[in-house]
Image (cartoon, rainbow, N blue to C red):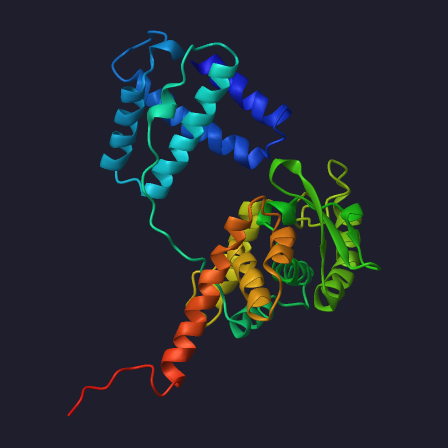
Length: 307
């Protein structure tokens, strides 16, 4: 089983162009599935053809018993399904047992987003008198100003940005490239950061990834985890009682554009969504805002009992 998992991960990396983050997520989920299958078998080899849909359902049941959220269970099932699809296509198994397993019903949740005032407060948190603060302000401006994913942000190279045109080239899911515009606030913050980046490279003399746009103070490319840690640090030092993660800037970017009249398909292009239905989640957020406004402002929004 283990060698087939490794073959599948290589397929994701080389043929599907999946990011390292995605491949590692599949590795963890399939590793958990393999560990479940190995229980009570000692060193006995597990053959893919032995596994049926009942075994996969039992695995999901175990996850529920351990307290896994439905979203987590659904993600692990998606990894198992992709793996068995691969095995079926490679003729390792005659039938795909995962096709008979239903996805857990997930609650519909609209994206949470920040108000414009909250965004501006967070953008002002980095101390721009320091090198790290100049860099962090630039990253936050880009996250909100473009709606890009955190993985796309840390994957940026210096040649991906055109200050003159106000455009960024990002590599999204499946390494698909797209161009994203950015505004003057983001442009000014990047312009301030570039000399800092040059000084860091000269000071550290690192040559492993000299084209990376955002560097740590050791001269190597920042990771998504580092950005999350930096953001958490700023929030904890501030008076904000918010649970803020980098993806929240993406939700706020889309919601604020929609609320100001932007076309849904244009937002889809900017976010890099393959399906318009994914972008349409933001229309529910807009409708909730409209309903709140109506109910608080319209004189006939609430029925009055007759005397």
